[in-house]
Length: 215
Image 1 (cartoon, helix red, strand yellow):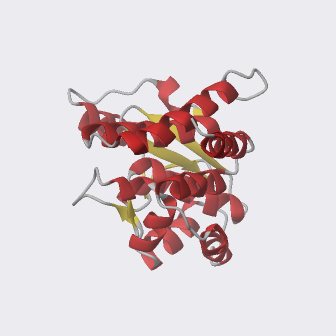
Image 2 (cartoon, rainbow, N blue to C red; image 1 turned 45 degrees about the vertical axis):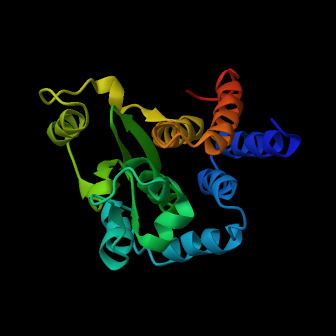
């Protein structure tokens, strides 16, 4: 691992530990496609948040899903762009984890309590206390819908362990995002991309092992 890559991976982990998820995600984007204008995309998140009128999930949905049309990429689910925050903002399409990260960051900027929820096979969020599925354009969901999302992702019958609804830390959010990319790049035999993915995962694992970082 080069010193530059080591420093970049450490930066991702530090930002994630500080719950600065958008900044960490944009650092990951820059490892894939250098030259990302981080400030531009952070400003776009600020702009979205500034348009949120209210303190609940509906206020977020009106801006992110309805006005901007940001939702899941059902046509090309496994494209790597779905995991990069800048690409998701540009194309308005993404995968569950990156869309959830976007919702978390916009919601927090708008003063709404946001938490990530790592269901097996499908990431969702609590927005102002309501469970929401950003991939399906911010639909409010309950336990039954969450159980069906797990079944859709993994197969078998609908099922839900209440522990799956426990909020996860920013570090865990970024680990999940990178695990998705690892799977995609393995299938593409992209050795160069896997190098920086593993570097970031290693740095995040070291942070996650720190007892001062929440699970």
